[in-house]
Length: 164
Image (cartoon, rainbow, N blue to C red; front, side, top):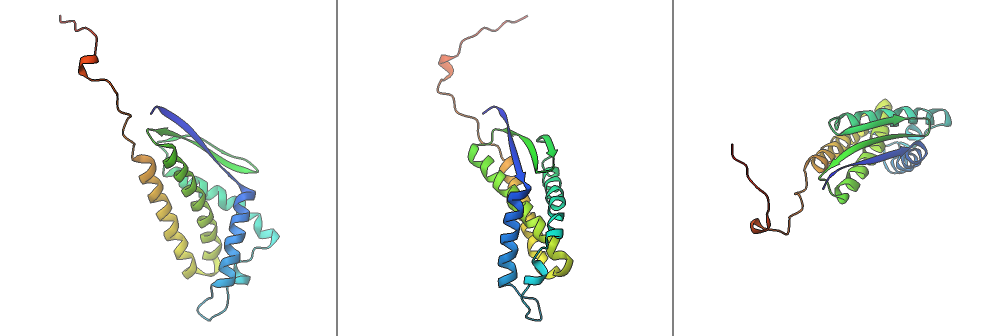
């Protein structure tokens, strides 16, 4: 496989929707040490939703820095964060899994950032999940696939050797 590039884009609107769904589950199902459900602590007001863009940007920068030898480009604009990385002997399946891990990392980063303000015990789980996502992505992207085998053999070779 030759070196190719792949671009990953994280749209703020998409992440915002995923985070809100995630917080809805957390708010309805989890409780603090006193037995109170976490709904009011994890529900974001419309004013607080604006901070999601900063969290997504921070998450992208943190994740991308782990892969700096491969990063070919990074762009942050008002609607999304995009980065391009070099794929050198990495299968399409591994590249797709890498993209999925990146998106999961961003959602967990946002959850961690919000929960750490008021529920540090609950936030630790997301810190662990973020580390697991990065470690898995490192294994995927830096473990090269074997080059494709050639159908020829030594008797098929041609050429010349010049001795001085």
